[in-house]
Length: 272
Image (cartoon, rainbow, N blue to C red):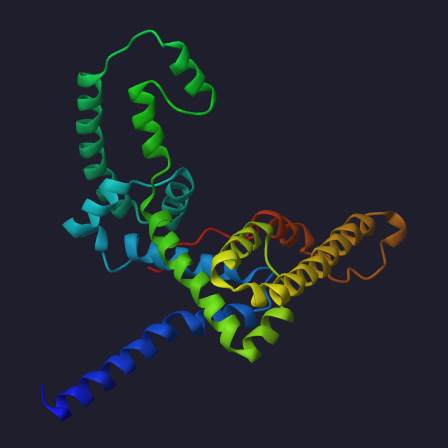
């Protein structure tokens, strides 16, 4: 390879690497600037809507055989079936279901054909008590129950955003300030953050990360407690003319803080 070609290759790789990094750093910064109860909920909603657009949107990816092959293999969870229905593309949903039924019915016939029932041994009964399915049909259905194309795609993106969070946290002082001035995280995503910190940070970094995050969470959980408490108190006739303060949407924000998501959101629909 010539020197010029080598320089071009290195330059091209550097540009590609920078673009790849920005693919996650820019949305992550945007999420923290959004002043949301949880930046990872903000990202989750954005990714999920993008995936619904991909699966059912105007691009008609559901007509592509390789996409339906992937959705046939993974299926969808109950939560995302509901969101796909609410999205509003009847034809797209029908196409996806058509080939999924064909695959499911074929697999089901094979499961029925190979099924054998019998008495459980004491050891098998013991396994059953700790959640191991002994019935092959039940085990097959259980596996399908925990498989979802949108969930799987989101998990891949989510892992990259979590990695990006710690890369930025370790090297960018401004980002650390942004995190510490945020409204914290929902408890679900905070659990993931703490778990990831164990492998993403060294011992020295952990000595400042955990105290900072604990303070952040305590302050913001107390803020939500106060907002919800005032929402209750506002319904007392004696407070009829009192200011709502920050309590009008405290119920949905409180639910988000506890479990994640946006209970106050309207269904996301297809842009026709």
